[in-house]
Image (cartoon, rainbow, N blue to C red; front, side, top):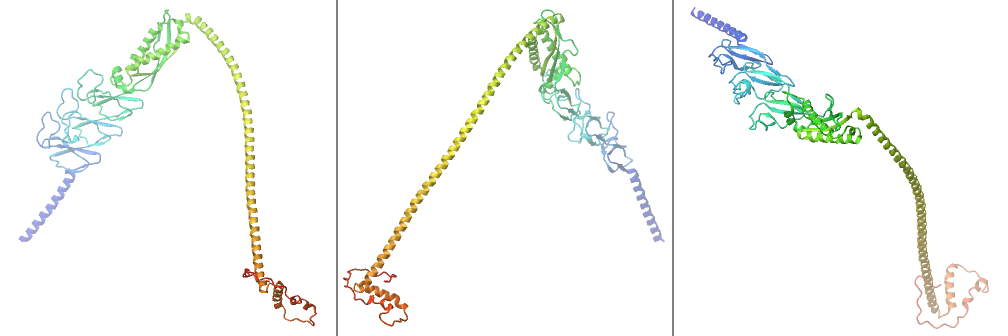
Length: 523
């Protein structure tokens, strides 16, 4: 029985434990869990802890009640709802092409003349790493940032774009005060207008730290008589009106100096009107009145005086404006209107002078045309002479070339004839040598044959007839196989009669007769 009770008690405890665990899991999923979606954040608020002081808005540490400096990012987090509360808000986003500037809402108050907050380098900026209230130095680029709205306020600003033809005048709104406070431009890093200007580019600066003002350095043009009657009294008391065009531009290297000197409007961008009103117009009016009063009214009708006045005007404008950082591109007097009382007679006189000059020019033109015709005829004659000379030179050159060719061919034929003569002489000598050699051979052969015959005749005691019969018999004997003769008086026997004759007186034996040559038998 006791065992059954213990088993039932144990089973009930297990069931209660499972039910408790399920209940705790349900409560944790619904009351302890903090689900933070994407691009959002959770601001933590402590319900329990020490109370804040009257001058505190955010809890300095987690031991205090109120809004905490710590915040939660996207994801699942767990907090005790008894001690903690939270508020899910979207994160701050800086769009593309913008920049964000933070303003610290907590911390110590700034000193006199200060407006930039002091940053604690040991603590992350967005986690409350600012020690004082005020504008946070620097800026935020385009992107998404988890910013606690109880700690910071974010402002969106546009970057400064300096277009082509402009220069940016940089003014430091923060920093140390320069030693010389009355200077127009200050050294780099000090508070005030910087001497170095910025070129064409997009610049991201905290507008509370630095200010950029654009100065147009392109050419600006205006008319002297556009808004006012520009004129001067002449030497003889007549009023002379004029109009002109002045084109100028601010020297880029001195844009900061010009901007500080002539800009009177707060954050003024266009200073061309100030330059026209304060520089260009006074200088032009002063020159016209001073120089114009030195000449009479009729002098301004003639062209020479007007040209001289124009040159001096441009020179004076350049000389006066260059030290001020303003470059005069063009200073042109377009119209001078003398008084009508003297304009007509002076104009008529000037027209007469111009007609006289015109007639003189026509005379000079006719003389020039006559000289030109003579020059053309001379040129034509020279051209024909050159053509004739070229033809003569061509024919002469061609004849000389043909002569050279004929002489060359004759010399070639002469050389060939010389070669042929030498060849004929060599050939004659060769023929004579061959003939002499052949004659010598024949002679030597004959001498050898004669010597052989002589020795052979000596063998027959100097009887040549006997040797001749011997030779004859020797030659013809092998050819006879049979001799048919009926009598000794037959014709065939007559042939041998000559060999039967007695030998003549024997010749004396030679003392030294060469033997017959080998290969040459006695005939």
